[in-house]
Length: 315
Image (cartoon, rainbow, N blue to C red; front, side, top):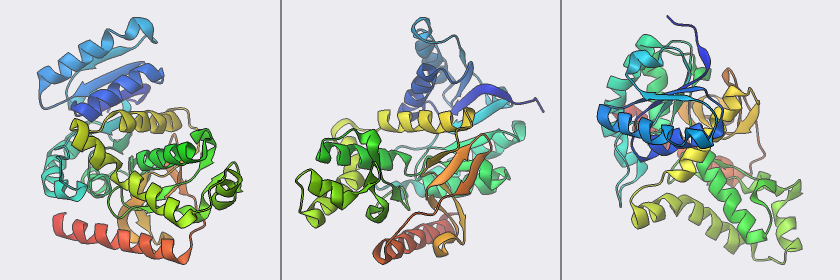
């Protein structure tokens, strides 16, 4: 077994999401080596060549296509492989197809690399994170999903637009399933420490209930709207992958709403979903409790039950 190369990443799956993620990672300067793996070898070769041609404008890096053996020393393995979400299809509709694909992919990765971090991006990400943890045999801290990192970014972006402030000053989370039962955690949302409702009123917004409902719905329906208009979503998730990889490789101990298997936190057990967690070089280094009201806690439990039912049926 080769020693891990801390500056190496493997991207498994070269569809829209995998290719956009590979491009974002090339631009990030985080890695000095990247291998692209896809069942369609020519597609992986083409993407590697195309992305490599941008290197004179970025940082030196080796980018090539390969197979699972080439990922044996990768510090992070980004798994985007799987069937994509079609117009009118929910993320959960993808379950059976993609669990089947994971049954062939994950054991192959684990055969060659037993020390790296598995970052699951394919949808439905919560179910596939759970499946990957079971299929790989890796410690759970080293198998997690991109979860609601993107949904949270959408939430912060829309709140920033609504309030005419920099979205980076907005501190708020989407939690639960990355999908239809996700929850906007309004109780803990704030702008630079000022509770969200107080800040809204400072900016001349007083119809809290109406705005809250509208913004949460827009976040939830973002993917459907984008898929309807252009067929797939990939730039937002690519930036989310880049952000998570930054936290890992630079050991930032960043608090991100990634999807990981829960063990009794908030009364939830044996299901992967998103809650804020500390992410660093060892993967998930601990969960971070956030303030939730009774309604949000109830919605979170309901979200977990939805996912648990699908897990029991499909894995």
